[in-house]
Amino acid sequence: DRPDIFGTSRLSAHLAFGEIAVRQLAADAAAIMTCDGSCPGAEGARAFARQLAWREFAYHTLHHFPHTADEPLRPEFGRMPWVEDTAGLEAWTAGRTGYPLVDAGMRELAATGWMHNRVRMVAASFLTKDLLVRWQTGARVFWDLLVDADLANNSFGWQWTAGSGADAAPYFRVFNPSGQGTRFDPNGTYVRTWGPELAKLPDRFIHRPWEAPDAVLAEAGVRLGTT
Image (cartoon, rainbow, N blue to C red; front, side, top):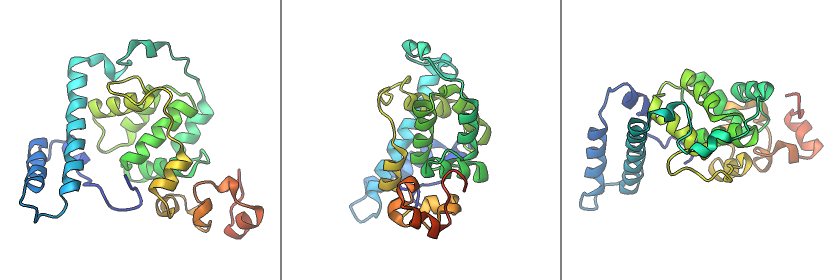
């Protein structure tokens, strides 16, 4: 959950291209979880195995409901009054929304072809539930930029966040980008890496620069709406 530390396997692209098998990784995780207690990382192995299960569930869902690549699993969401916000979509894609965690994630994606999963959920929530841009549009952006993109997981993840998919986050659940940043990037390390214009802000304002006093903004070289 912490994008500010190296805490994920980074194997997603290798899984997507078939360079390593899910069964192999599941067996490796199980070996750590079931050892005699002398193996470090048992809790991490359990968390890793859960993510593998989610990945397989996404394939299961697409196999049985192939329309979910383009249409909502729950048909009532087909009536969602999405907004055609070209400027908002462009700002989101370029990492220029003004919300530090969202922008950091989109910049990481553009630069590396990868984004931390916690930040993927925050960025997707912002597009669909703050800007009200349809999830299919965001899914296409991720499809173009992610090195680990595959149809099942990309569609499943976007539908989960938008609220229209299997076991989805409720339609009324919105990931607060500032709150998520404070919780999962508490020192602003991740935001400072991908949003260097904010690097000199104190930690307490790194995820909410609009709350910083004018003197603090000036000292950090930050001009709201400009830099």
